[in-house]
Image (cartoon, rainbow, N blue to C red):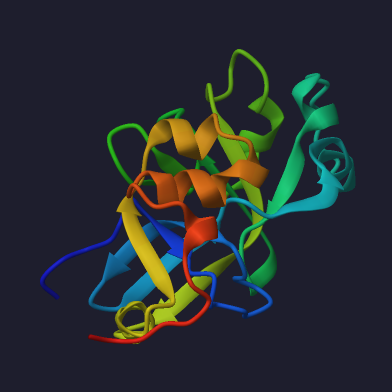
Amino acid sequence: MSYSLKHHFLVAMPTLIDSFFYHSVIYLCEHDDDGAMGLIINRPTRIMMRELLSHLQIANSAEWTNHTAVLFGGPVQKDQGMVLHDGGEKWKNTLKITDDIFLTTSSDILQSLGTEQGPPHSLVTLGYAAWEDGQLEEEIAENSWLTVPATHSLLFETPADERWQAAAKLLGVDIHLMSNTTGRA
């Protein structure tokens, strides 16, 4: 593999009509010779963090839990919770993605979210997206995705409903002006 798209956004092209990935932005947590894994970061569910924490019997009374939706992270293991954050490796089962972005899959982080003990920024998802070796590269070659290096501000500070357009703008592209047909020159 000559390059890795780890810590990049995949921005769905308007032609990608797949029900899971239509107008999606995926943050790639892993991309190597074995394939790729990422989280859709712009699909809020109807589940609020307060509901999820209550269901898991985790005490957290932070105001943040009342107005923060859990995101649909992708079609694989839709019951698997994942927390993308900038809080370091203080929790069990934490993968360092970059010097300041981490992925935690253990529930011990949930009690601290939205509090001073938790990470400054976080996204909680259920499920993830995954590709086998070569599959993502094939989809990119078929013009299903744009790729752009990820930014902390788009990941954590841009509202979910603005992330698709904002990610394309990182490339200087107005995604709404792109054609719904693709081709190769």
